[in-house]
Image (cartoon, rainbow, N blue to C red; front, side, top):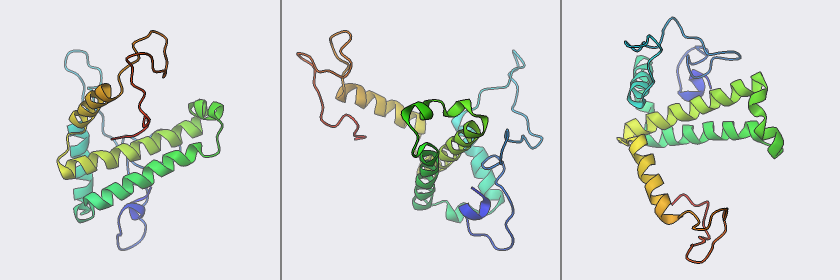
Length: 172
């Protein structure tokens, strides 16, 4: 994904979006290092709010905020998810399970995951959705909606007292 794929900009293609499409190989750090933990000196954990801030700053510096509407971000998220799916298109289940064994394929997967996450985080920020709270609440609802089997070893089977929903893959 390049800048011109993401937003219409006048003039020549400015090149890859740093941190979003860095080409083959590891993503460059552009001289920026993750903050260290004071106690251990190890890199500090990344957090959702910090990543959302970085993405917002990145967009603001390029004057992209007018394009970051819920509709546009949802569309971009869908496109990036399709690009992730494209990596696995026509793969056998065995080939798909080994995709990370090949460095070039692993890089493509990692880049597309980053693109999907970037657009999801931007979408959530624009709408004021806390993605971690939303996911936590969804897991709670799914635990009630799809209870675990009461019989040990009953993988996906309904036993007496168990419910077998017809819509196991529904996201409701």
